[in-house]
Image (cartoon, rainbow, N blue to C red; front, side):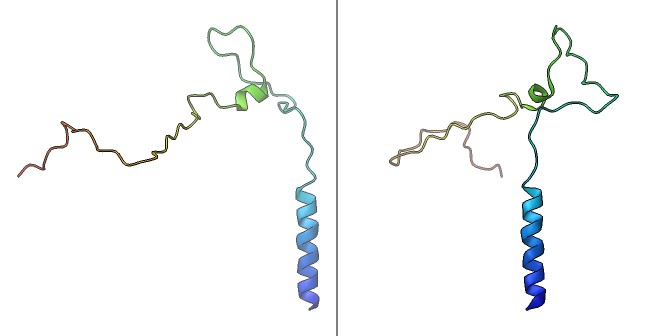
Length: 83
């Protein structure tokens, strides 16, 4: 019984410690700088903008659900296997 209570206390303390992180602006380490600006760009992007993926890297999904069954159109490339 005592082991269970100790494990439960450790789990609660561990959860509390992992949840107390501070959120602030990202900065490079001391003595280091952000990467240089991309070729052809005048301003240097910030750390937050470098961490945001572009739309091409993470596209939004367009899922169109069918409400009823439909006949398929003929597919000219759906050929039987060769002998």
